[in-house]
Image 1 (cartoon, one colour):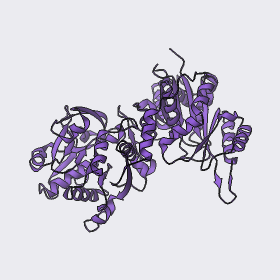
Image 2 (cartoon, one colour):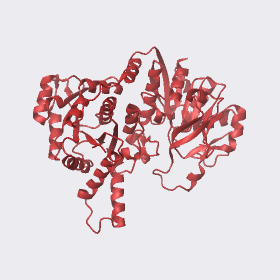
Image 3 (cartoon, rainbow, N blue to C red):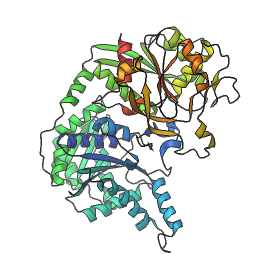
Length: 533
């Protein structure tokens, strides 16, 4: 077994600086040099996972293949590395405390007083090293959520301090991401916030090995030298991360700044290969030099926070690049859509994506959107709740099942074309109890979906409780909405199509979770192609 190296990424000054993007970019560069890398995220909130959090609170809840509801940063990790993550890649304070309390209840601590140090910190260290113990990775990158100085982050920072001491400097390093703000009034970049952030880290017992400085404007060598001197960091370990037009440029900027080489040198690892980034560069070139331009309407109920649909937005970017097309995403609040104003909202679109979600708010707007797309033959992609709304629209307006609905919204509906899955009727707890993770789907060969996937059996990720009601299967087939994808075990409907239209596909699963830079999802790529036409 080779020794695993550990990299910790912390943040200071302010949140949302992009620790996840820096972590994913570094991992991409190390991977391109032939190293096996994984990334995990430590989240300081006390929720066991983000599955019960409102998207307005936390953005998108990302689902792994093994059915874990996780932080949206795991989506970045997968999109950059083209490697699946798992339950082990996302840890929360809630999970840490739950594990420790369960051990205490079983008597594992033999009567000792259970404390943050050593019991909580020991559990954090165990989780961090768990990925490294799998013998699959040369380097484990651990992103610590929050900002240095937050009360919630203190146990994680202390755990990193202990690990740095236990593993030794050649096996472990800390990258600290901070902000160098530009004051337009004086025309100056200011390093003082970075100095104070590093001071807070030093007070916790950690000397950062590398500083990554987020900035609007390029840093001068004098500024880098000043930061290195006052923060006790080597000058070549002060890395500039200037604002860029797309997150996919960040790995190339970090390559220019030699972040990967600095990390490898400090971990006593050879810079063994020239980085292989040809597919990444091709992707960027197509993204920046499009031949076409289209407008796609994203109709959802959380559109005020685009991070709520992060994977969908990035999947459209991937498919835009592969089709050499610039996509202008128009965010449309489904609550605002009525029969009177629908043309004002949707009339200028080349394609419509009806987004997933939960609950009754904005449902009628999504149903009207499906009807509008169907009647005007506009390419339409309906995901999860979006598919359910398309089914309701078709039931009401084509099959003439007046008042058809989902029992999630109207449990007394005469025509429950969408209903709670049988196994969900016994579920009481809300956290982690949905149909989650990867499930098989068998696709009919005489379908558009088969033409796009190029195979009859796929595995896609799910996150839902309600499903197409198979009692109405014949009604839909006879009237032209065809269930072309079925789960072979449960017989649940996974994909519906309307073959008489240019492009109308609804899926119960979340294809956006399987789209990466190198492998754009075939359904998204096909949807964008249809919008271009």
